[in-house]
Amino acid sequence: MKQVSPNTSALFSSVALGPYTLNNRIVLPPLTRSRSSQPGNIPNDLMASYYAQRASAGFMVTEGAQIEPRGQGYAWTPGIHSPEQVEGWKKVTSAVHEKGGIIFAQLWHVGRVSHTSLQPEGGAPVAPSAIAADNVSVFVETGPGEGALAEPSMPRALSTEEVGELVALYAQAARNALEAGFDGVELHCANGYLVNQFISEHSNQRDDQYGGSLENRLRFLKDIVAAVSEVVGPERLGVRFAPLFASTDEDRVYLGLVEADPHTTYIEAIKLLEQANVAYLSIAEADWENAPDLPDTFYSAVRETFSGRIIYAGKYTVEKALKVLSKGYGDLFAFGRPFIANPDLPARIANGWPLNDVDPTTMYGGTEAGYNDYPSY
Image (tube, rainbow, N blue to C red; front, side, top):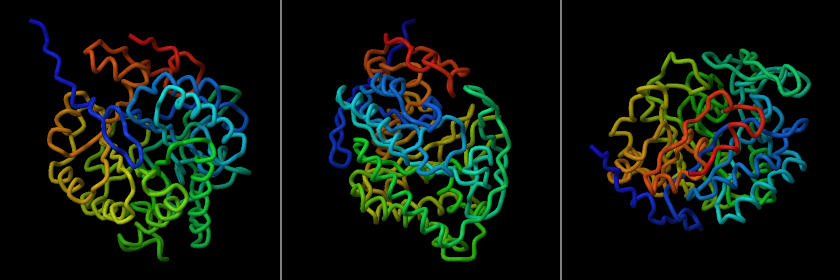
């Protein structure tokens, strides 16, 4: 019996996002690929060709780009803080724009999820509080082009003054992104990295205005949203969260932190984004094998709270995207692994063509193999 393909036309209706009109609702989400040039973590021609191949996405967000040297937690990830990195990103944005694509830079700081070998002068990683990250590995270079997983190093707590300096570093990274030709920026506030560390009761034990109550734990988020909005305009700003309601023992790249009351924590955070009038909210759902969907009460509360565009990601199938779209919970849908292996993913979805399988061994680091050599249909 022939399998009937779902009617995917709803994913190919145009949609406004800030000042942009997207020609479909299929998103290339931020995907760490660790292909930047060394030394200097500089974006390169290989990366430009990879993004250009995927420019038929309605919307694209780069892999996380660290906003300063201390923001790096994995070898070979690109930065967006040096002049050389900005020049490298110009290759990426020009290649994508030549194909008619729209691309935002994801601004990233890993906070405590790092290792002394990745830090300037081998210093301790910085964090809201001196609490080590557990259930997570970082990736360190062991030789040219070679690396290994390691335990994160013990972090040191940032002073109140240093938190303010970090807010300024986010604003500067946003200026760098505009100089590099990006259409906007996304703040990486998910997966247990720096902003998430401030939000979480597990990693924030501060007693200044950035710790204690939920309002205080959300203050760093509020401050960087305001600072970056001033640079790029709220209509060119998105924010990504990973509101986990469950966790897993499955061995995997870092997920993030499960709060005692994730619903209230994240709805309060989303209220701040609504007040700031940002263009979109991106929600990364749990994506391990058989991970539960978010509760329906949460999906509907997110939609009631936020009037901008909502992007969902996390092991999404076309069927799940169509279901969430039909319920009105989300507007855009990101497909990670399928987009790694299928540069022409929107055409494959539209035509019901079969998908290439992803090669997990080439996801992080390496050459063009498993990066920009996946065939189009």
